[in-house]
Length: 100
Length: 217
Image (cartoon, rainbow over all chains, first blue to last red; front, top):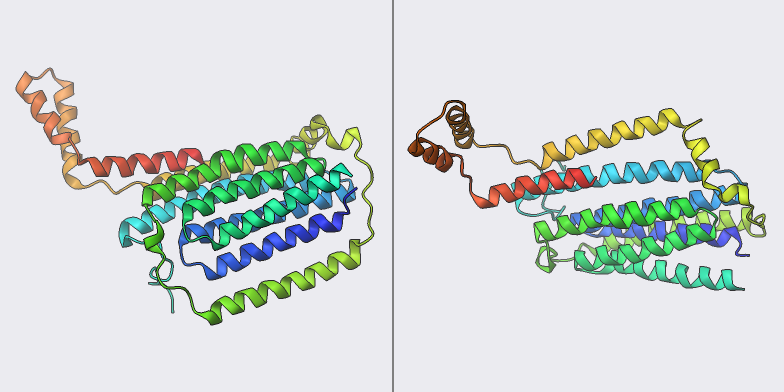
């Protein structure tokens, strides 16, 4: 039987990788992919805790996270399309009109 | 121990492909290796006694969301050339140090708290789908309905955001075509209306893409 700490550590590692990606990349799509990675690592944590505590609530939360991630991806990618139409780029260093 | 072996294989696969997602310069490769990460995580979900979540992961994440990503990557044609000079070393170093600090803190907490924790063997009741469904449509029914509403709002928002604002001339052409359709017109009239309503090809394609981006979500 695999100890639950291994799952939790794997999820933390994936979350850290996603954080580094979201903070260092400039391409909007790659940043978005990193955020999806972080969402998924949290899902793994939730399922691992659900197993540890023998409580299905964690799995239900994962279900809702999946639905919200789908909505987020649809809106976010539509935003990228709109930005690309105006600026001809999705390099987030060059989309800086609102940045101080 | 076959379970440990499966865990190790898919954990390594998930980590390696997650690194590719973050490090690869080409967004298409990043997206494809995200698929590998997601499917590896789905295997781990099965190991943790959540086969329904694993199926959802494969169906929704890799089947819908990642395909949407791929679609947008190819539509916008952001290849290697979009990625110019790298970000500053300071920013990269700060991100890596911050992530490492997070990892150390959380990892120590996990090892301290659950280092020796043994999970109870899987029982039938925990894995069963009817139990999950009863909880989802019982205690969480309102949340479930709200999620449906959220998805509807997201679809509308995506369609509105991605749709190109219609220029004035085709709108006028549309009115003309309508008038032509109302009363039986001569052949020449119909041909004229047809010419006016025609739009440039590129525009049509972008509008259509906005619609499918919303639909997939």
